[in-house]
Amino acid sequence: MIEWDVTMIYSEKRNKWMFRLNRDHNTGSLVLPAGFEMDFVTSPRIFWGIVPQISKANRASANHDYRYMNTIGTRKQADDIFLCEMLEDGVPKWKAYLMYAYVRSLAWYNWNKYKIK
Picture 1 (cartoon, rainbow, N blue to C red):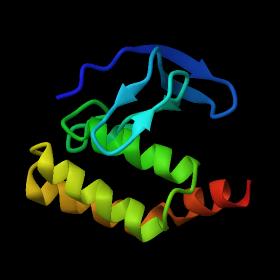
Picture 2 (picture 1 turned 60 degrees about the vertical axis):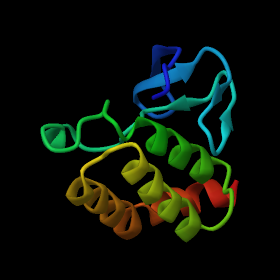
Picture 3 (picture 1 turned 90 degrees about the horizontal axis):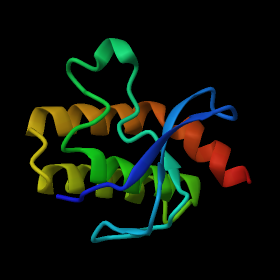
Picture 4 (picture 1 turned 120 degrees about the horizontal axis):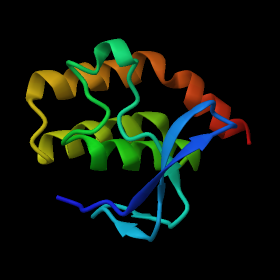
């Protein structure tokens, strides 16, 4: 499990609280650079009881955010790696597949937003 060295910041651009990496983090499949901002698991607060923002899915979520924000590979590849990393890190199967279904059905907007840049 990764020990995250982060600072919590309020992002005016995104209008929400985010985590900024204080140093580079090698996650096994990517090196996330210092200064990278993410929110770990993106889920509405109402669902935090089922899918908390901070959980075993942190590594997969951080990598997924980075792949989306930098359009690394295809969207399907980013989502498939997200699922594999959640399962590797011990996220219960039902929860990993629920989160995977969420990104497959709703995250196209974010992918397209970053792809245009």
